Length: 67
Image (cartoon, rainbow, N blue to C red; front, side):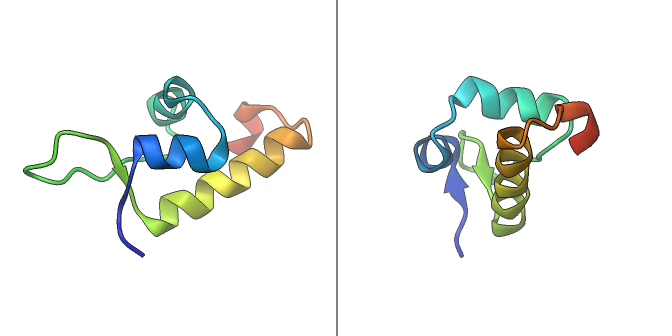
């Protein structure tokens, strides 16, 4: 799987880019930096982690417990 941009992930998971940046800020996910590419990108492992976070949130589990 290739790297996905924050915009692609946002549309795929129906989350705002602000939410994704927040998750990154608190350490739940981590973006992959590509030298000549200015946008945040995410690898397959991060996408899987984000899927888990979304499921936990739907179950009502607080983000602090997701850490």
